[in-house]
Image (cartoon, rainbow, N blue to C red):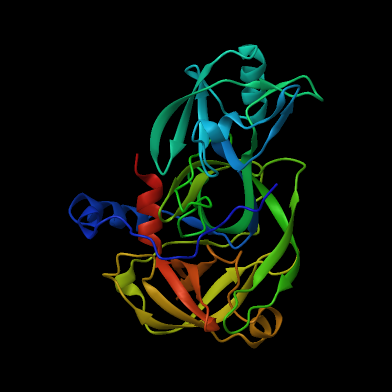
Amino acid sequence: MRKLKFVFSAVLLLCLSLFMGAGQFYVADAAAEKYYVGGMTAGFMLGAGGAEVIELSEVVTKEGTASPAKDAGIRPGDCICAVNEEPIRTIEDLNHALEASKGKEIEITLRRNGEFATVSITPVKDKKSGKFKIGVLIRDTLSGIGTVTYIKKNGKQFGALGHKVADDNNELLQISDSKVYLCSIIGVNKGTRGKAGELRGLFINDKPIAKAKKICDTGLFGTFENYDLKDCKLVETAPLSEAEIGKAYIYSTVNGTTPQRFEIAIAKIDEGNKENKNFVIKVTDEALIEYTGGIVQGMSGSPILQDGKLIGAVTHVFLNDPTRGYGIGIEKMISCGTEK
């Protein structure tokens, strides 16, 4: 299973007008809510929304080799969503549909770059296995790790990552049969100038701690189900207008499963930024710098607190200086996560 690509490139957010008018009422209402501070690292297993084509291949038949998928114009990165209008969600679904074809022509619905197309294709019988194939290597699940930012006290809705979650084509993923597991961090590839570091973790797969229900440009959202929140700090949120240049803290898990608090400095605040870059932050905690080099992949979503209030989340790292990075304002995350 390939690691889920958590894209750190800048992405366009919702236009500022969405945060005016009724949006102002929402922010005021959100500030009155209580939120558990996250910081725990989670393993995300996200359904690909179909059978995603990773690579084209040749099928060895009695007559020779063939690649029906290639002949039909299917490309790596395409997602097979349906066969003869029957939904395809897993590898098993596709294999069943190919066997049911008995080698007759079928109609495959593809998703490519956010658009749908239908192609006709005739499966061929593999000489060795006797199964009908079209010559594709596929996956139906993507996985990776990131940090939970908050869990709402009432309802246990959570937000994580703070940035876009995309596939290898930079296409926003579709939520399908998605689960969230607690992740234990077992090591760190330290960040250096010009190269992003990375947390290394193992999924604790005894049971999911949450279900993912939505992905948007500001992160991944869902509901916690099986996690003891008694040791999590309970706080209110604060809008960007209350943030100040100076000392703040992030909560991250860089070893095991327990979040730790690390000191940072907010170097710049940009309320009008239309990307996930409302803060420029600098890690000032010497212990974190020594251990990770600063901000590394997997720490995205780490909550930012100032004066005891949740104000945002870490989103990006500066490749030329891993002690510095960007953060998103918490109201942007909450707003996008609660939109229908």
